[in-house]
Amino acid sequence: MSTTLEPEGTYEGVSAYHYDNTAGGPLGSHHERWDAIAAVHSGFRSSVSRGFWVVTDGEAVQTALQDWRTFSSSSVTALDPDPKFLWIPEMLDPPVHTQWRRLLGREFSPSAVAAREPEVRQAAVELIDELAATGGADVLDGFARRFPTRIFMRLMGLPEEDLDTFLDWVHHILHLSFEEDPDRSRQLAAITAVSAYFAEQIASRRQTPRDDLLSHAMTWTIDGGPVSDEDLHAFCILMFMAGLDTVPISVGWALHHYATHPGQRAEIIADPSLIPTAVEEILRVYAFVVPARKATRDVEIAGCPVRAGDMVMLPLAVSNRDPDRYENPLDVDPRRRTTNHIAFGSGPHRCLGSHLARLELNVALEEWHRRIPDYRVAPDQDLEETGNMYGIKSLRLDW
Ligand code: HEM
Image 1 (cartoon, rainbow, N blue to C red):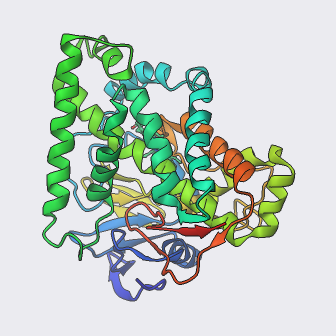
Image 2 (cartoon, helix red, strand yellow):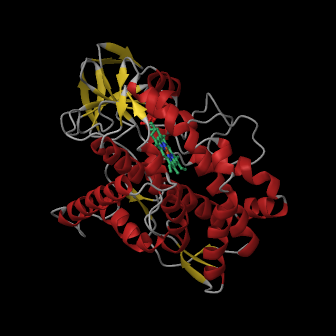
């Protein structure tokens, strides 16, 4: 993928490009492309598939995410305005969404998350200790993916011996390239397996409830009635999609950033009190989520004449790297005072797992640098990032 886009004329008076967010590319290419296009446009039309609008004005992205009445979450995939599936709570609008969030909020509150800190730290330490002795590894497979997945499984009450199967499913659903899975049969098989797995977990808790998130959710009342198995299933699938790949992506960016910026690394090692802001800066600069919404009415946003039913893509990176909002926006500055980024989104769907994600990222950076302070990117590898959510595909470090 090139970092520049070839213009394709105009659509309803607005510049059009063949912008395909699903394509992977060389490391950093998505962010470079957003920076370049946001410098000249507040919004544009993508001609991919049935076409959709893309907002590249940082402030307008945030405004749209907050205006759920106009920008509905009934579809959150720009290429699929009428999905045949439902992810809970991601694809619900208020007021039903608000009820889910109120109940889920207790499980993911700052105090509930803080109580998990000892087990989060222990999981990180065990994995890093194992790696430290090896002298080098693919840190995405060896640490970044394994660590949060272990925590996620405990939170959901899933058996830890299923960890490797889980990692395989995530890989097959989210990371296989076209060459590896040309007819998408491996992806489909993994989706079917995950779906059956959660159906089984739900059935077993209906019989024998336990002290875990899934069992708690079975006792909730939403919209005046108990939560159905179908809704529980839709919730599990969303948790799988939202909770598993995100922290690994951020850990990957953090380790790559500090491997390639040894001076900055020395600073956070010398003064670990800088780590919380460093984490926010990594989240901000390497924002990788690209939400989309479906317009419920005709509306103009960032110069785009959106019609009811159109899909609108709202890349968080353009707000987080906006030169009007941040001085030297691309610098990861652990002393920056303005850290009000929107890497976790904005509005009613702002990330439910943000406190947990922050804890995991802080613990990962603290414990990693305590045990492996000196590391570098291993030679002879082509570093690439995925499309959709921008994560490093694989990253070998030496130490
Ligand atoms: C660095 C890590 C993470 C980032 C950057 C991130 C980012 C986001 C963003 C941007 C959204 C909003 C999407 C939208 O507006 O359409 C979101 C939603 C969500 N996230 Fe996260 N996330 C992270 C980690 C997690 C974790 C660890 C969990 C759970 C274990 C989680 C669970 C969720 C859920 C359930 C939603 C849907 C909330 C709703 O629709 O109300 N996330 N996340």
